[in-house]
Image (tube, rainbow, N blue to C red; front, side, top):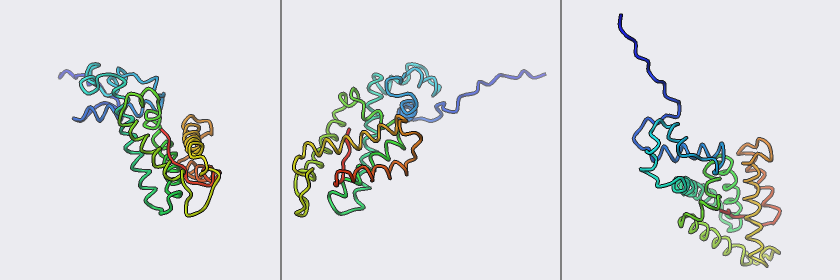
Length: 209
């Protein structure tokens, strides 16, 4: 009678292909979405992917380096979405509003990436994220720091206050939704809420980081 060998069943998340770096970033984003940045453990990711505990460190020198990679990937995805949204309108203020709406929708649809790219320790460890944040603020400064087509707005008088208000509204709403403070909010509902809230200032709002 032939001897049957027990086959160890791998988890659904087990690593099956050649790009472990990519798999680690994806798995980390899922883990951060579920448990938050501070709860991320590289050893748990390795176990989930079916690789040795040391394998991830051939691609990332530390847990923070992995989180930076997740955040930078998220920043690139976010930028693509915001620029695609802004490209659909011509008015500079409307472009900023479109970027803000895209920002909140991204947070709802990609909470792991959003949490990583807005985590202070991760941002501090990434020159790329700092450069992208500076570029975003420069764009907002150019729009909020001058009258638009001769129309004066109280927000345009103080660009620092306008920038802070814009960032607080978009980031605050995104954080409230991803933290579950508003219940179960779909991407479409988040987009509607952002449109309504950004109208409070009467200008388009940009993204924060």
